Image 1 (spheres, one colour):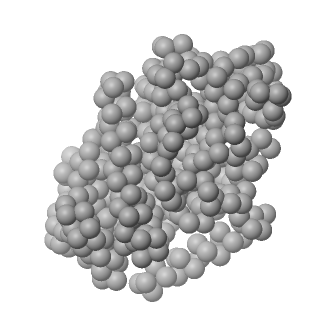
Image 2 (cartoon, helix red, strand yellow):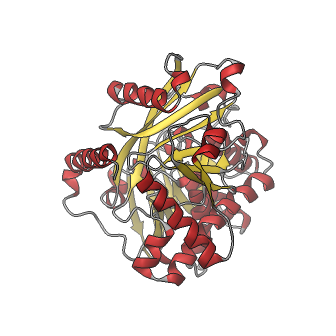
Length: 427
């Protein structure tokens, strides 16, 4: 299946990959060729072991090739909330983990010389859509200053947000300098190209139809082949329902569709006023809106699409929302529209762990997985090597199947409708 996005239209060529035919042996079989699987394979190969990746579709076909390319140390749950629920030490560990994730991505881009990824850490602006949200951002800034003694995120005024974004609708914001943007598909293809050059085998169009244990080996069955491995990593995230082999992970997730639009090339006079400092921006609405400039276009994304397919209504709503944020863009034509699944969890946190002694996973990035999945891939490589990994709240210990998962679709619609209502009334 071909998905035409801004990223596919501007990406470097992918390595030439084939589907799996016949039997293969390896140390670690990885199901899923997105960031998690690719990064796990990179670190496993560095350790001298032999990974092998199988992908149901094309390389980075899921969220890794469709996301907005926003690199951030943030979680969906704020640090003050984490501290109130789990204590200071846990909140500080989460804070450090967020920045370790960004560092992992930067290190990989530099080590593999992924210039096509076009990584730029120009900063992230959390723009408050009302005074209530602004108070929440101030609470986060206060927490960072008080508990870490630093200023990794700082408050900025409404006038400063307007100057940095080109939009006058926000009441202020929180600027995080160590964040930014990346070309998400080039990032994935660059890692895959490095793996391919080193002889790591990646097979596409090869869905894992069954995973079973035979003695001390794990057998991964595909339509035309079979992999025998010492261990298996599941890296399927929001697309864990493609086959029955990942049912147990699918039942722990709530897939939520997110949509993105990209304008036609903008006139220089308009472009000059949009995010001139190169930051990326997301607002504080529960039904998040975010935007960034890529080349001579603005891309604008947000939650709110439902079902398994693209939604015309969601795209129209997204374009109207872009016009609300940037009135100058109300009549600008749209060149690309696409969507994909965000893997939500009940606690809004990603998780990594083991299903059994030979099966490992990392999933549930809640829409913030570019840096975190890079980090989790490295942690999975360590886990499969028998190393102790301290993930705190991100461990799989409490990551259980969702009750009444079969009824998730109407539940998602109801929850999203409630969140939209809260946004409308300013809460």
